[in-house]
Length: 130
Image (tube, rainbow, N blue to C red; front, side, top):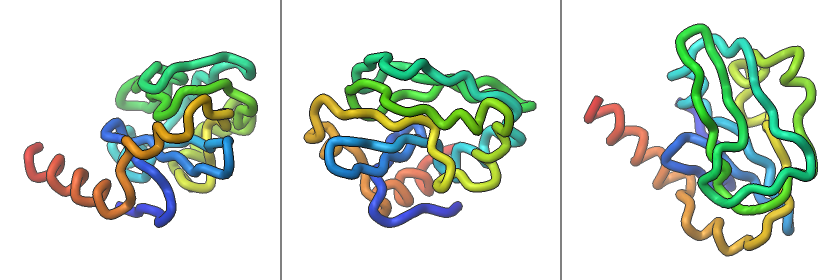
């Protein structure tokens, strides 16, 4: 399992990269391994507004369809349109290929998320209990 320093992580295996008031959001390496070969990503519309914890997209693989939950509240200002034709990019580079960029309503929500060390420990515990 690969993680990246400087990102925030959720228990649902999304990552957040915060830059000022904007946050790029994607799925983690752990998530893409669990899903297997990703074949479709249902993206939200730009200007859609979500609360933290809302489903913002669906990632479908040959195994299953999985909801992705937005870790922070805000408005979608950019979507990764490349994923429409090349959803496998999430398998090939889960941290290089974000799903959306959100203009955050409340950047302090990031404080509720895990750092890299805590996320690694969370995944190890999850695997031990599987």
